[in-house]
Image (cartoon, rainbow, N blue to C red; front, top):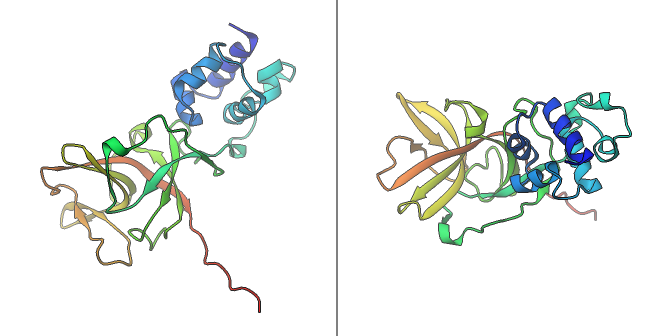
Length: 233
């Protein structure tokens, strides 16, 4: 194992990531890519070292060359982590895709937003809003940031803005959308905050035998575009 590999493992553990898989999820990179860097089978480029250093709260110089103070590991404040989050796709109510049409092995672009420090070890990602199903909160073109639901350790509760996958036709059709959880007369509903009346609340437990709902994540932040200002003159 190379010196770089040993320093990478040391930095990862001191930053609180027990396994390489935990680190890969937090970094938003494919696990095999990170494993190859940690076990030394793939070289570590400067730009990648800088990304890892931000996450592990150290410096790229220490990871690559070991010529900085090793006590810097774990000393850099988390708030400077601006490596970004992967943009995993769009959310659009009523837009159903066949599973066979979904891309495989996609390399997702990064958006320059900061990870939410309240969930340091959970996978986080971004989505782009298309359409008007949640336009009272996030209009068309907005970017929302999410925490992976299963990774978070949280239970479903009222007042969450969920990234929801709905499956139909035995899982062959998939819809991605954003919905609020709201309790009405003792039942949990998925509720759109929309100016369009066609988007109606959905009872979570009465979706029909052909529909399955999966909570993929919950929204922790977002950015909404402002209207284009009028031109002078």
